[in-house]
Image (cartoon, rainbow, N blue to C red; front, top):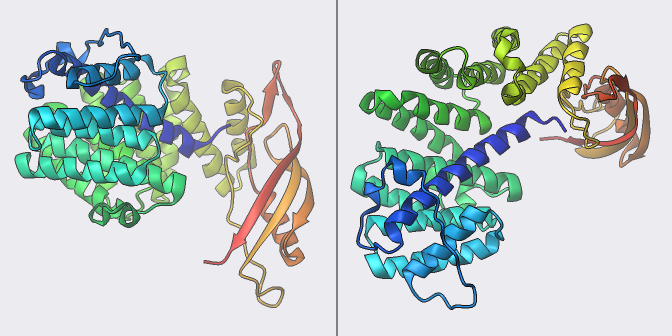
Length: 412
């Protein structure tokens, strides 16, 4: 299944999750057996240390050290239930709070772990409450332009995105309306600029995180804040890592995505084509970026009715990525409502079945269900313009039969 936004979601959440797992591993050497130590002294070597612990589940957990061993062991194994991890993280936080005190830095690091565990378990409101406490502590102790505040803000944005995607929960419904998506991302830009001034050696990291977060959250402001930062991220990658690096190729993709979101399609096309012109883009490691570039180019050429070019890029994706029967269209157009003299209905759903041609276009389209027949021909007109990834198997393209789709009409 080719889904540009899903690929970006996975990238964001993988980055988010790995960052917390590194933190947990780093703190293991600080917390286990040395409760008086301050976590800020964990160095780069400790950050890469894996907690080699064995937990006897038959023994009741009564001490902080036992609880944190159980927590880090679960994180390391990767074979945990999110709900069980949340319970262990909660116990670890409670025992740590009693050990270190309610206002100790270690306590808030443990609370950050708890917030992350609640997020993985889908307990979004509990996650929000704990993240809010953590970011308030960082703002109070280090200021709202500190690195600690920056990463806590990224966590909150990730939480809001995940909660909205899974359960349509807004920042207000999570109890953190001060961090609505727009407010949080505007703040993220401001903090990023301050941190780049303070720590220019880390500009690539800060700008990269910020650009990815804004793009994945579909930041749509028409000003040039995001575009300027994406271009600087691209320049940082070129200067620090060179044009042979995967990060540089990734940065080109994000500049292209920003232009795409701003509907500056000619500029977007230049960046995506630049990616595909690089020999490094053919490496297996870079394949996801290559696929994203091709997918955007399908959309760009389809908009211009350049069918031959759109088909070329859809077929190229098919050769790169194994076929998945859960088809997600590469390019769609909004469903147009019938004129008022045909229907005044505010919503309708039309169920269609079609075949996907060897070029990735819908053919043999049939109406198989409809809540309002007045919408049928408009659904047909809409679907004829879509593009899919064609099936490529055993070295040849093949027609896919009987793909079921629903087109929903909803008047805003």
